[in-house]
Image (cartoon, rainbow, N blue to C red; front, side, top):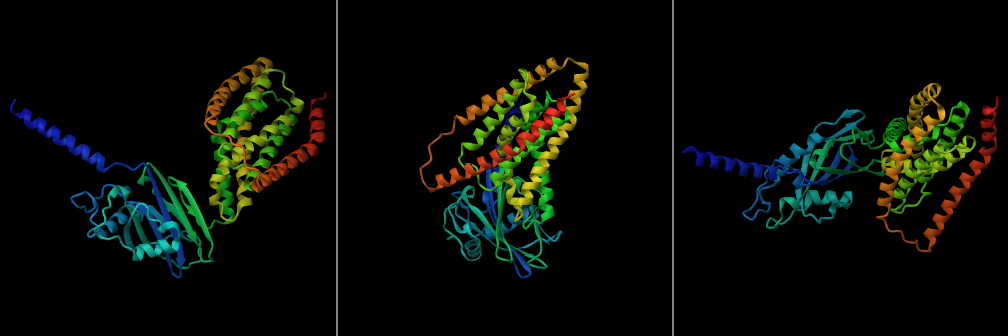
Length: 438
């Protein structure tokens, strides 16, 4: 009985310490890391800005008010950089990882400081500007600026970075600006950890990376795969299948290329509109299968919906173009090729299964059952995406030069599509009809 007050006091202290530790270890929600890299002679200058709140599990000197003690903080900033940045931002030169850099300068900046808008002002501020020691600045609002110096063999070598900074926050956005020895400036940004990324990628590297991007994107895109399945369910002639898939591939390649050359709208409502149309295309194909499908003209339907799906692919491609360097056409070709490989892989698995089932089950009921399942799934997508689209405001564009240029771009795209259809219509329909003849 006598130990109960002591036990209660101990439990209270544990609870208070646990609450304090939870607060001390709280992970920031959104963290933005800004990085400049510039080779100069036999050194590579790295300037990094990161929120001080992301330096968790580290105590900085503070005043009684809780604000940072700027007179005693510099050495602690160096320790924080060593703990949180040096081992989580690796740089490679011609495949070899650079040695740990020298921490050349550190400073604390105000949250509204604009000096990191470009390399010159960022460099000057890190080395020369210091806040007055009586500045009332709290850890949660402070920014940490640091200058790192790496030893390199040549300023014209190939540089790669491998950041692992995602642990700084729940959502970590890293923005890197590389200023090459030739005076060119290239920027990349990404959420999380992207793996090893070249700052000046070569042709083969771009081809390999974007081939993987396209392949993984199509396998992750369940709506696209479901459309392909709905497209081929009633197709039992190999020649017809080839024509339909070729038309679909050609169509989404056209709009994918068009988006790369800014021939598509840039309005905020356009991506959700495309998502709605993709879901609608699946519903349409499923209902056409439930009715009597027009197999002979299915290639034309596939071509039309392929244009829509191409816009969907373009949104994913645009997010990754920053890794293409100067090889935009190579990235487009490789991304599209990756899509086709993934699509072909799915067809290799699905089509034989359909043919196997068709030999043992009544064909028409099988088509109806599969199409009904596809329609059910796609209808839920359509409803959900329509609700998202309804949150956007549609306004008529101003009648100015930009509107005229946009109209000309759309006209060019429409003419290209019409020309392709006109060139392919007669030979494809003859080829398909000949396959259906005894």
